[in-house]
Length: 263
Ligand code: PEP
Ligand code: MN
Image 1 (cartoon, helix red, strand yellow):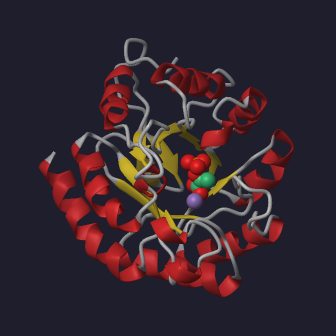
Image 2 (tube, rainbow, N blue to C red):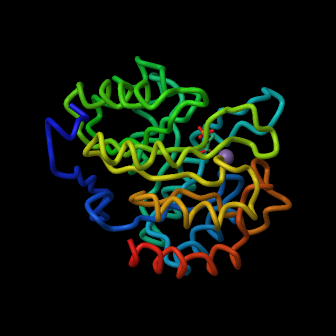
Image 3 (cartoon, rainbow, N blue to C red):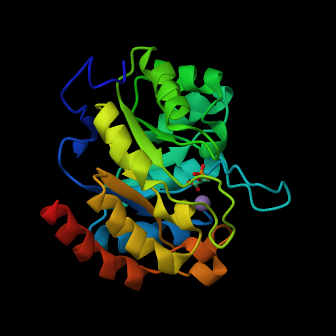
């Protein structure tokens, strides 16, 4: 179902009128986690002002350590909905378990499947049954074939609205959090009709590597980006070291537009 041989034309995923795929470049931005009303409202305002088209923010966080901040849960979802009401930005947020799908779907515009859950097949089928747009992150050590087969699980439920997201993979390299696989972007664009976006925040783990890799991702053919932006990265409860501050995000946006216009 995901193959270009089956469907030669690009799938365009419509998120409240915003088109993902088919030639436009979408930018999804916001904090790693929803931390408070003030933090998410401020994040939403700054990313919208800079030209982002959707807001990201985690309410249910898959943290590597159980002793770190794991999100505000339903309160986080309510705050995201409030940010959408005020800014008009559709919201992208992660759902971690099949039993939470109904709850998260009540608030979200795009259901994010995190890297750690790429092969949670019950979760994939459950989000497939909602018919809603699904942002499918590539697993930490998943091959491109495995990633596409996970997309197949969602689409097999009758939900064609899958956005693939490359977010870096595990390699022997330790200088960066992950290794960005831009091969995967160009190859997935060739092999599938699905939109492909890139997350250079988790892909690199360092805020100062986000701008160059964001631009490289667009040059490699990505249909957009999802990036972590925080009003005060030093005080972020998660992933502050890879989050852009509002100034650096605003400075990056015209460069993304320039590269997108050139490819
Ligand atoms: C996130 O988007 O904050 C996240 C946890 O991403 P990933 O699943 O790619 O690690
Ligand atoms: Mn994060």
